[in-house]
Picture 1 (cartoon, one colour):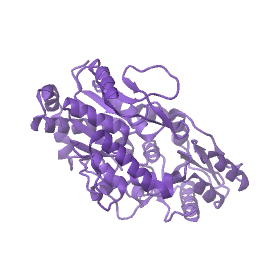
Picture 2 (cartoon, one colour):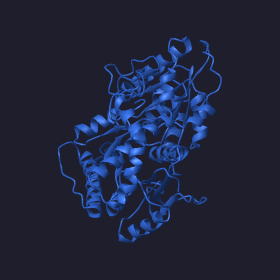
Picture 3 (spheres, helix red, strand yellow):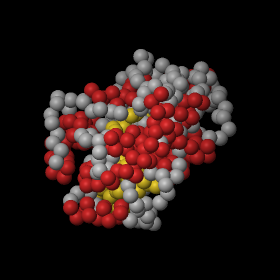
Picture 4 (cartoon, helix red, strand yellow):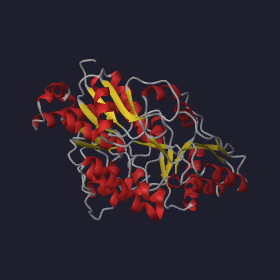
Length: 456
């Protein structure tokens, strides 16, 4: 144990499984440890075999959705197991909830037992997620999850008219010292629904990965060259890979695309590519590891993200911009946050003209025809060098090292607030550590807001 913080992260899925929240946890752990802090992660056991990680407390779990997800049943026995495992790792300074369901519930129970300050990062637009995946039975699913939460935490979800998912998140945030959102547009939605968001800190991009993936500048394609697009994500309805394939069929043959990922729509996507006669310029690669995914982005001319009204951040877009690759998006909220304002000076809010920056293009509607038009326009700009390079300040501000500095300021505020509220003698050490990082907190506030972000 160092003389730094001991951060205990509770998450819904094992950090070595695929997902945006898991990637965020791994990055935060890496850079917190680089800064001299201790990190322990409490998560469902990894469904895939692998070497045990002493910093990960693995819990018995049920598998869901054909093994894609795991769920943990909270209870007194599991609480005791967590207490024993964490006691062996040394005193905890702050609890960080990096899950929206069972991980968060377990973390809140642990923090309440030990009177510890709590930070919550809301990764999921619960309302949109349930409705995209479950369709007409989404409301029943949301009510079932709310009932489960009430059973294990005692927190009642109160209806507000903002949507059952937002009501659920408001109950989850009750009693939490700091609520962090991964983007300005999601923070705005949460605030409209009655949540007090205290910080906007996106998941960053690993500094080392950017350095390793960024090679010599790509030459501007000639008029007769193909422009290469890359798309990465889960092959599911809310990610809209089929709409991308339909849009590609309506573009000229100078545009080719590489799609990475897997999911329930993967086989259907393969058949659609074949049916539309696109096999010579649309390639589906299946799941790849993160380093290969970053290399694919770095070697592309454009990254395309086709989600609309679903993402809370849009991680692949951030990765592309960190690598200097311009982007095409379908979500105006994401596009509006990708401006060139000086980074780290204020929490970003929506711009007047989404996608107005010359390194960002945004479709003007959800239909494939709209996406086809913006793909054609962006490819023409890339071929003719009409587009502008991604500003270096924007790329640098998206690195994880920048986000971790902001996160430490949030921890300091949470620990100081807990100490001020007299959370008990057990808080003497975290309170002292809070003072140590108060300068970082003051720096964050003086830069324009109590919660700053480098980018969307």
